[in-house]
Image 1 (cartoon, rainbow, N blue to C red):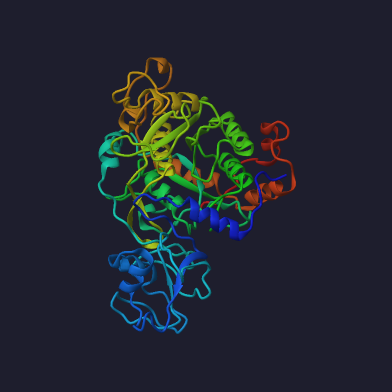
Image 2: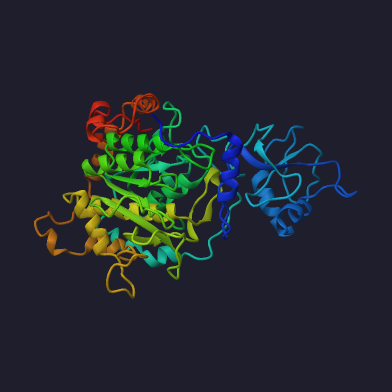
Amino acid sequence: MRHGIRVTIASLLTVWLVALPSAAGAAPEQADYVKYYEVAGSYQGRPESLPEIAIRFLDDADRAGDILALNAGRTQPDGQALTDAGQRLNPGWLLVLPWDAYGDGVRVELLPFAPGNGAAPGGKSAPGQENCVAAASTAPKSDWARQELAPAQAWEKTRGAGVLVGLVDSGVDAGLAQFGDRIAVGVDTTNGTGRGNLDCLGTGTGMAGLITADDPDTGGIAPAAQVLPIRVVTTGPTADAANVATGIEVAVSAGAKVIALGSYADLRSPAVAGAVRVALEHDVVVVAGAVTGTDDGGLPSIPGLLRVAGVGPDRQPAADYTPGAVDVIAPGIDVATLGIGGSGRRAGSGTQYAVAITAGVVALVRAGLPNLDAEQVTNRVRSTANPGSQSNPTDAQGWGMINPRAAVLVSLSEESEAVAPVADDGLSSIRQALIAVIIVVGVAAAGLLAWRVRNDSRFDGDATQQLEQTAGPAQVIDG
């Protein structure tokens, strides 16, 4: 029996619009359900123009560039395309609008005519992303996150090679050059047969960039780690808890040593909590966003689980986190990461980005100290965090800001029997090849798991026993 409530497309759109952030930084556009405007023959007696439309729907003529970025080069119903901000707009053209557009004439529905949608001009995207619309790129105010964490100081010891990170979110645009060949094909749990290396919402790609992108401006914390993208949502604002739980199971079955749960995962959900506990029993470190609000904080602080809160440069929280539900903090406001469709460097804000950064640190630890178990890894990340001005863990910030260098290099007395850290060496390629073998058998297993979720009761008995009955050895394709 599936967990959660089935809702109509109309109610999904309503929830999506209400949940959009009001802070600076563009939210990801949807691929099929978008905000758009159909150009009229004239407005108030004058031909329509991008600056005029920007004033009408965005209150700012300068936002014409945002509209241009969303539509440049996309084939319109008359076969023509928009090329510059001063171009005359033909009646009947359908202009995709930024997420914060509002007013009479703004529609939120399936784009009636969508051929030619794809990467931004000069950009690159993976095959299959042609119908995904990239939001206008917004530059971060600073590189404060990279300056704060200085991950390169840990790279002399390890860059995360040989570690597979399961990323449970909106998928990943694997065609971006910054990823190289480190994005596996993955799984789409929403249908059980699709692949995970596509992304129309952008949050998964942004997270993957913070984990493993190899780029001087948007580089990841562990640029040699491999990411297994597990798509639990395609175009809507929410994910079914059963799909998230299935995604966690798939990552465990595929051999992931780290699982990063994006904003679509709710630790308060019994299905998700059950899948997390199964992952922890299999020596997987699970990194999740701290829950928000004043109600139950979901899963408690347990070995192998890291509950992360996102913060800004002044430690201001990215959300109203539940007191006592935070283990560590990480950058989560105005973070530089990657956009989909070749839209380039952009500013990202949200707990999911703090989760991705922390998952990258965990990947470094798992690669540099491979003999540590999940409990020791999470203890190391917590105990090496920068407490700032606090002397003890607090309800709001836990143990403090994660510290990549200390997490990899500091010696802890309680680990005296563990083997010393190892550096990435010539065996890294062998480890990568082994990962490729581990995740080589196809998406069929994910389809089986998703089918089981739709037809059987989830976690009604012993969760571990259910996983053993269905998972088996590694069963996810690496592309």
